[in-house]
Amino acid sequence: MKNYQLSPTLQPDTKLWRYMSLDKFIDIIDSEELYFTPLSYYSKSDPYEGLLPRIILDAFSNVIRDSFDDIRGKIQPFLDIIEERRNKGIIISDKDEINLQKLTRMIDEHLPKIEEGYFTVMSSVTVNCWHQNDFESEGMWRLYSDDNKGIAIQTSVQSLIDAISTDEHIAINEVKYIDYFDDKLTVGDCITNGRTIPYLKRKSFAHEKEVRLSITPKLTPENIDNHIPKGIRVKISPAKLIEKIYISPYVSQPYPSAILALIKKYHIDENRLVNSNLLTVDSKLLKIF
Image 1 (tube, one colour):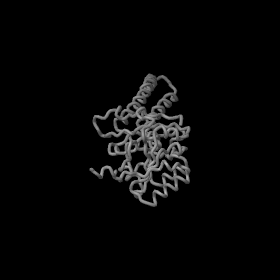
Image 2: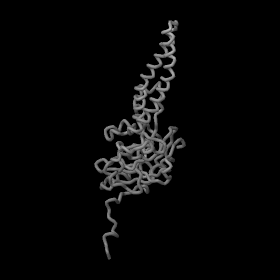
Image 3: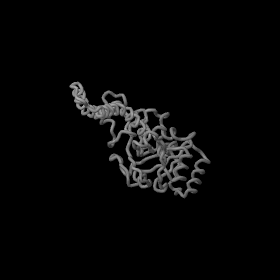
Image 4: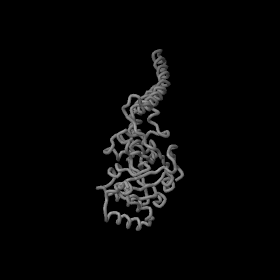
C-alpha cells in the first residue's frame, strides 16, 4: 500500500490484534480481503459513532455562517442601491433585483443542504478496526468471540501496510477517547493526527484501545443526494498480514484441530498457529521448592 497516512505515534512494530468469530476469519483468508464497514452500520452498538462533540460542530457552523454572512453583506448594498433608485423614481430593471434576491434565498436554503451532506459523508466513512496491545486481551476475547469460539489475528503496523493492495487512500490512526460533554473540552482535544471523524469515541469504549483504518468516500454535489453508505472490500495478502493466529482460550477439542486443518487448506504456515495460554498457569508458579 502506497497511498496512506499513518499516525506518527504508531511504530512499524506496534502489535495489532483483530479478534473475531470463525466465519469472519474464514472470510478474510478465503476472499483475501479486509472489509471496511460504514460508520452508519454501528448505530446500534454505539449510536455516537461518527458524531462530533458540540464544540467541533459549533466551530464548523461558525465558519460556514460567517462565510454566508459575508456573501449576504456584499449583496445587500446592491439591493439598497436598487431600492434607493426606485424611491427616486428612477426606472430600473427588475431582473437585477430578482437575481440578487434569488441568490440570497439560495444561500438561506443551502445551510440545510450542507448539514444533510455532512451527515451523509460522516455515515459513509468506512473503517477496519484493530486492537492495539502487546498482550492478549481477555476482554476482547469475550467481546468478539462467538459463543467463546473465537480467533485472533496478530499482526504489526508494518505487516498490515505491506499486506494491503489498493489505490484507495487509507488513514491509519489511534482512536481518541473523550468525554463529549466535558465543559473544558477544546477543539484540539478532538483532533488526532489532523483528523476527527472517525477517530473519536466516548471514554466508555476506551478498553478497546482501537486503531482504525479509514476510507472517506469520494462524494460530489452530483452524487451525494442519492448516496447510500456501503462497505468496501480491500485486497490483502493473508501471508503478509498474519504474523500469528491465536485460538480462543475458552475452546476445547476438536476446535483447535479444525482450525489447524483449515489453515493448512489455505496454505498458511501452521507454525503461526498459537493455542492461547491465557487460562493456563505456568507450572513454575505452582512450586515453592
